[in-house]
Structure formats: C-alpha cells, structure tokens
Image (cartoon, rainbow, N blue to C red; front, side, top):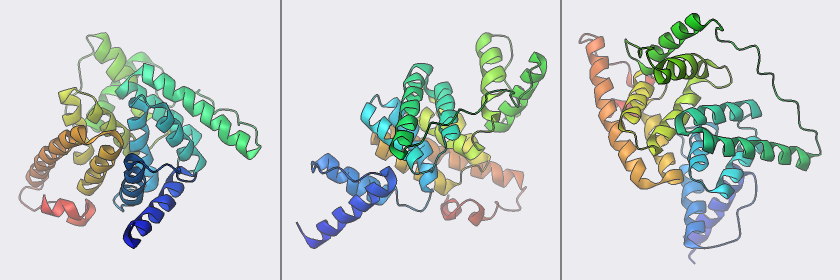
Length: 284
C-alpha cells in the first residue's frame, strides 16, 4: 500500500465516523474500501449540499432498498448527529410513504422508533413524549381543504392548473391529503421535501413524476442547478448509477426547459443572475 493509499484510507475512516457517528468498520473488502474512501470521503464531503441536506437524500434511498442494516445505520446517524430531529425524521417517513409507498414506510417508521429508543438508552435518558398531532395547521372544512390543496398543487408543481376532483385518487388523495395537508405540514421546509421527493421519483419507474418533480424543483428555484447535480451524484452513490444516469438525463432536459422559460419570462432582459442558482447554471 502506498502512502497515498494510506492517506486516503485514513481520510475515509475519519469521514465515515463523522457522517455515521460510529467508527468505520474494520472489514476491508473492495466494497468496504470504496464505500469508505469514495462515498464518505468524497461524495459526502462535497460542498454543493450540506451534510444535513444529504441526509434527506440518503434516507429515502436506504428505506427503499430493502437493506435493513444500512437503513438502521443512517437513521441512527441522522438522529445521533443532531442533523435531523425526531420530528423531522418522522415527517420524512410520512413524505416517503406518499412517494414510495406505505408498506416500506411502515418498516422505516418502526426503525425510526427503535433507533430513537436506542440513542436515549445509550445516553441514559428517557425517551421524550412525541409531539401532539393535533390540531392540524390545514383546514378541516372539506371544500376549503380541497381549495387549499388545489392552490398548493399549482404552487408546488409550478403549473397554472390542478387536477379535477372527480375520482378518489385525485380528489381525496392528491388534493385533499398530499397537497391539502402533507406538503403544507410545518415539520419540514419545502427544500427538504424537494430532496426527498426527487430521490423517491428517481427510484420509481413512473415516467411522468420524475419529469414533473425535477422540473418543479428547478423552476421554483427551491434547488439550484448545482444542487440538483449534487443530488444526482449522492443518489448514485446510495441507490445506483443506472437510475442516477436516467435522473441526470431528465435533469439536463428540465434545465434547458426552465432556462428557456426564465428567458421568456424576462422578455429578453436576460436570465436571473447566475450566482442566485449556483455557478453551474451560468453554463446551462
């Protein structure tokens, strides 16, 4: 092993411990080496997203992957580090349930409870009482709730229209709950919900949600072009390169689309300043 290899390994061990809040495992298979030296020492340390923001990409990836040990490890690390609060991770589970499915979210939720208890047991502290669920911050009147859901749908998706209310999926599901409540819940900021959503639609095989949510994340300016690129790289490391390659292609198409729309909206006066969206946007 060369000095360069040794330095890289040590840097990887420090990075792993910093992110996961436990020492790096002693095993030294090729997978272990590259997980430590590339994923943790390189990807997690990149400046385009904060460590906290990267948690919101990682958690849906490991929750969907049916791999219990990585899910437990990342839930524990997110909570033990203090990067994500118990309220925020529980909101993450709910958001994941909508975009990735309730059965996997049920397992995710169970592991959150178990790791939260583990952390308090390790610290010799009682587990705090959960935050009260009621009252909700969204309207309880059905018609008002649907109207709020329609307005939120248009705002989140950057569209001038909302779905009809003529079937249970669109009325009771999309307008009443997903946009009438979930996207409006105070437990997570909208940018954090964008990170979770894009990760979820990237590992699904539905063609339209990935286009619509990548477009909306960029068009709304909740994510800059540079942040989207970092999201894609982080997603690749935690879910796989083939689906990340597809996400990258969709992102490239939507960058072009929103750039053209921004130019049209300014009526020839030029795009918004490049530094508002990150240096990468200036080249797109």
